[in-house]
View 1 (cartoon, helix red, strand yellow):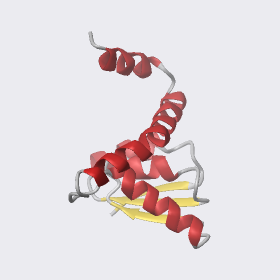
View 2 (tube, rainbow, N blue to C red):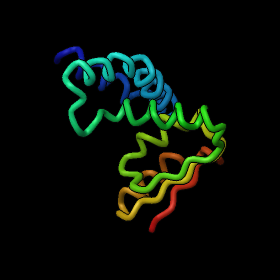
View 3 (cartoon, rainbow, N blue to C red):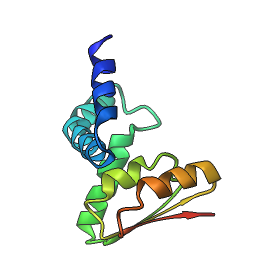
Length: 117
């Protein structure tokens, strides 16, 4: 078993709240290098998710925004990465299975609302 698979296996054994924290911190630590790599390759479309996260975070800080509304929750990565920067997060997902998964994943966060529609 390679190191990446071993780390994934260990992470899957952690409580969900700790898994979220590990993901959030890993994302923060690798964001700059992922964006730098993307820029060095000519900023090909589409940009990496980390770039989109950093733009939303920067705009939120610059304009002192307290609410983020997102359409297309998918797996909830954007909400997960922004949950510490906004007082209220609302995400709308069309697919019923993805909606249920995200709703269950974020149910313990009072400031996060997942809607289906």
